[in-house]
Image 1: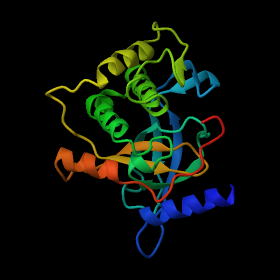
Image 2: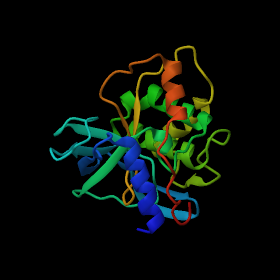
Image 3: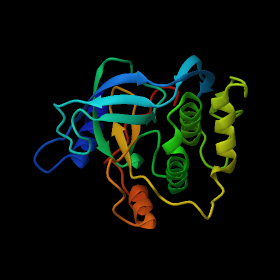
Length: 235
């Protein structure tokens, strides 16, 4: 890791930790379960058989971060295509607002759409089709962003056909995501899981949202780690 990456990570950990000690979320990665293989390109990098779906982690007893209970199962979605992660390895994360994750950023429109994606579809994103669609839609938000939500052009291009249910479903969701609906309500408090060496993740806080929707979105948009780490090659 470069000295600058050390510095950025140290600053991020300081923000997320208590005044006296850094808090670590120690997890074991169980795999992408369930998943569907999807072919795609992102920022010029080709992924020929990328498993797409929810990530499952087990929180280890050695965790000092109080956000998630030890031995609990954590379902997350990847917010970082350009670092590696593999089961059954153990990974340590720092928790914080998703705006602190380098591939998410602080753009309020993107943050609002990510929140809307979770509020509308996270609950059902548990099987291969829905979970895969959710992950593809999230990556599209990260790497192409508002105003260009499709999987056929831009920085993220999915080359698997629409006969793959996850691909067709992701396109359907993206086509309506920028259109508000009277039934929209903020249901989930999102938590960013940051690692300097492994793929960043977005998780859902286990407790109900403690504030009205507008307040939560404002806090998410305003929050962030102290600094953003260097973007990876090709990002």
